[in-house]
Length: 383
Image (cartoon, rainbow, N blue to C red):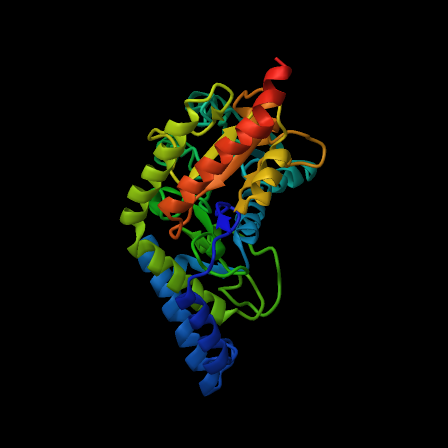
């Protein structure tokens, strides 16, 4: 089996799994307990927090453990407007965000906030001039993802932060799930930042929320006051330790992995560019990360492509799933102005640190074979 759906999730490193098991076995005390065992477990939690903070180059007390990036996004967005609601009622979000962000904004709109959508250009990069026209004295929240999860475009986060210097009331949140370790970012430029362990070879069920200032985000759950009151509930120390391990191991491989992924993407782009009906929606240039490639076969459903590859032992994903219950095309691709046929016929291929050149070569060979056997005639018959 060749697994090329790493944007969805990555395989945990063995060392990460070993850490998770060892901590659960030897340090299973409640970190909030005042007994000796609890204090020992709390020291381990603090060590994990410190390691994450060191890698992200932020203060240790700015790191909060959550269950996933979806929860991190929700806490940052809902909690920040709760803090700032007396200062304004306008919120801004880009049109290509992950559902955990878009649906949070739509919920805020239902609660009475005025929602403005930030346009993107044909590459999927946010329109900075449009942002300037949307910002007002009433704006209190803006969210733009670091790297898009559908086609891999990198957003100009630091340029946005410069614009926001004239609007100090705005809380600037960044979803860093697909960007962490792939694109350098000075987190002092943003107010909050979310990541999830299972995107960088950690386990599922643990994430991180970075907050530049804890006081700018109200907690949206209540209980025992864990994580400085931001997220009450018994902390999953084993998962936190394993997240720190996964982040460290992945960071150690960053430069070598980037070189490898650039080679893999170039292989696919160069081969598929030879075929008239294969559309690359993630070009090989500096605007995009090299670990994500969105490919379309117009007039062919993405599900059909995914199923054909599945039968040959290759796992990729379709991007046709909508981000809202009432919209029937992928919103991120639609925002770029892609045609309906291009969107419906798109798939996403994504690499991990463990993807091999041989796996990519096999994918290319199989995709071209399936195209020639099944899809080319269908496409051309409809032209």
